[in-house]
Length: 239
Image 1: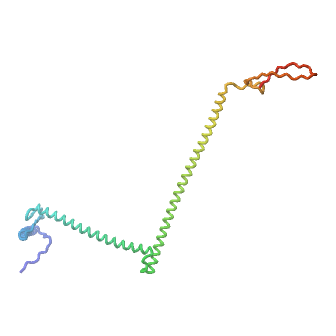
Image 2 (image 1 turned 180 degrees about the horizontal axis):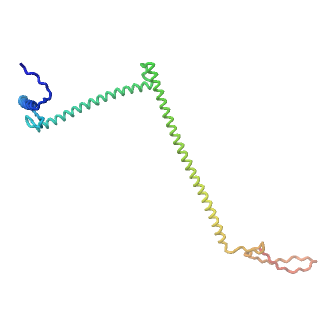
Image 3 (image 1 turned 135 degrees about the horizontal axis):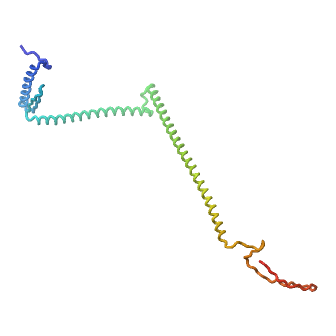
């Protein structure tokens, strides 16, 4: 009569659980030792009981086994990561190639090329897309023109205000120059008046007292036979 199968599940009875743990632990460690001897394998086993006790077995050194395990596990992870990364980028590249091919086909159709295989419905859809694109381009163009016009108007207003300010400054400069000319002219007249040493004096309304006087003797007049002798006159002539 053979043994019945044992259901693999947690044993509720603590005594039976401890007995089963001891038997199977010893069997596991025995099998590990046999495996390392028979197959020349490096084996390391670590067991923690439910009560926290440690049981282990290593064919060489547990530290050496753990270090070797960590090193190989890291290399495997890197290899798996590299493989996964390569596969990921391969998928991305394939997806981008398909998208690029689709965009190239759409561009050729928008340019009016390769339309022979399109149906009426496809052509109408393409026409609608072109009309929508054209409306968008025109709207953008009008917006740019409007912004440029606003900018030009703003600059024109600034130039106008600057011209007004410059004109005010020029008027002020003209006014200052006129005042300076009047001042300089008045100073010249005053200097000319101060330069003459004596006031001008005239004799009566005709003769200048400071002019030289020339005295001349009047010549005798010829006498007629019947005329009486006239006395000689001494005349003064002022020039």
